[in-house]
Structure formats: C-alpha cells, structure tokens
Amino acid sequence: MENHNIAIVGLGRVGAVFLEKVLNNDGALKIKSVCELTETAGKRLALEKGVPVGCIDDIVKLGVEIDVIFDFTGDEKVAEILRRKLAESGNNYTQVAQKRLARLVWALISEDECLPEVRSTKSQSYADMLLSQQE
Image 1 (cartoon, rainbow, N blue to C red):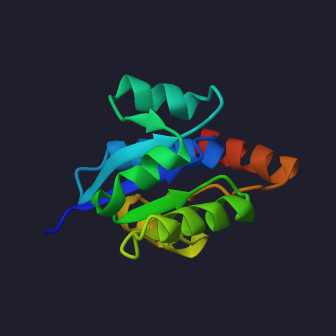
Image 2 (cartoon, helix red, strand yellow; image 1 turned 45 degrees about the vertical axis):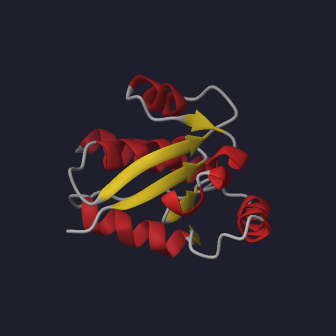
C-alpha cells in the first residue's frame, strides 16, 4: 500500500477530529505537518504526538513531500492562499483538498462516525455533541 503524506491546516473542532482519527489509524496517511495559529486542543494533540506545527509557509516549503493539504479552516480565502503559494513555489504536485475529499477520506478510515461540519451553526454543533454522547 502506498503511503500518502498530508498536512492539515486548521485544528479547530473539525480539524482536531480529523487529526485524531488519522493519528489513530494505521492506514496509508502520514501527517507531515499541521498549521494552527491559536491554542486549540488539536494543536496540543499535534504537539503531544510529535507532529510538526508551523505556518502555511512552512507547509509550502515542504514542497512535494506533501501529497495533499487538508484545509479545515472553513475560510475559502485560506484555500486560495494555499493554492497561490503552491503555484508561486512551482509546486504543481501538491493538492489542496476540497471538503468532499476530506469527507471521502473520513468515510474510508472511520467506523460509522460523522465528520462534523466546518462553520456549522451553534445548533448543529450542539446536536453533534449530543449525538456523540449517545454512542
């Protein structure tokens, strides 16, 4: 099985869940770097597990060592910045994953769990929390 090197940008509620699932899965995904500017549980988990934490520029500098960058910021401007910086660096190999791809990967590595929505409403966040408590 071929291994795929990934980076994660945004370790808030959704990115942290994705990070934890990938770290606990012995599959073909290897996290090479993450980007989170604020102190979050996801950032603390990454540091605890020895995953390099940096900025977008640090991820771009990794070049073709990264196959896919998963953007969980919920901000379309971040994906645009990532694509622009990759193009400026001459990297036409690394892809910035759309939410659909992240959900596909999640479906392949999860066990009937749902990946929370990025930028969901307060009500949806509360519903997600209640559903997770019932499991």
